[in-house]
View 1 (cartoon, rainbow, N blue to C red):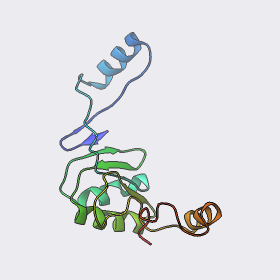
View 2: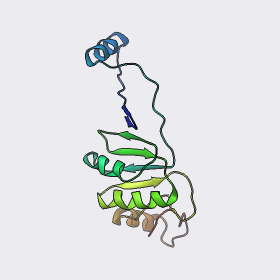
View 3: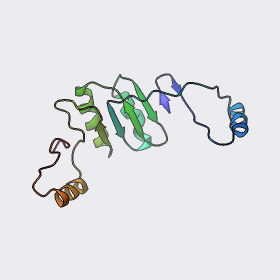
Length: 130
């Protein structure tokens, strides 16, 4: 997990094996990272750097996976969402904020599923930006 100023590694397995692996790699025990909770973006793993360069707030990045947990102002969430979507990713706003839908632009799959289960558009109209 990449956080401002550090990268954390989780070792799992038998305690003796984990200690040996940590020793070989020169790892030091540390507190678990805090996961910011205003939004979660998912982009191709190689694009995480582009996303992190786009804002100046707290984050925890799952570096090999392409998921970034972040705290940002509503205007920044809208901007970061547009960047994530331009890279083929998504951003989920985890805190209900006026003017910021939970989900961003609806993909064609999203639209087909929504129409199949809610043909009149009654349920959760606030979820998508379009």
